[in-house]
Length: 207
Image (cartoon, rainbow, N blue to C red; front, side, top):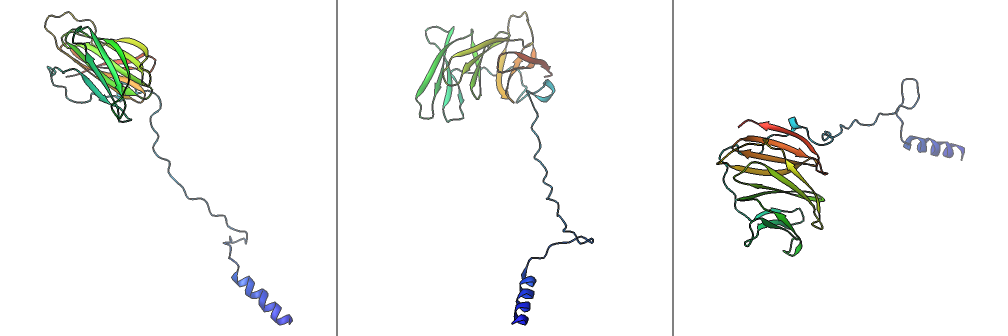
């Protein structure tokens, strides 16, 4: 009976998992595998040297037709249309993915009007300008209600006296900042605004 009990104990010990031991006899603790973190995104708004011209630098720019539309992340769209009865007034409309109008806002329109649209989460941005005059203005609206949040002039290439002129403006959102891109007869520029309407920087671009 004692011999059978001893054999049972030995068999049970042989089936127990073996622990890795160091030369001193103490259990060896294996270090966890090293996992490299993903590359970090740049923090904060982009600086002037981090944003480059997007697209063609050809000049003169092709005149754009209105209305102008912008697809939205939810499948809807923004639409900017100048009034047929008063070319100084335009309407910005927000539609959902089924084509239902969610809101509309009355906005100014310039002589020979141009517009650039951009969306940045809770805000939509409308940049209005004249295609035959220097400058532009940014109007920020609440993306869900259409309420106007702020307006700000675009510095662009600065005041320029001219007779014949051409102007084309585009806009996009880069890391939370609105970037306005202007291609004028008097020069090219990039200009950035934070979500509150503060101008972050302006830089000339070589054609």
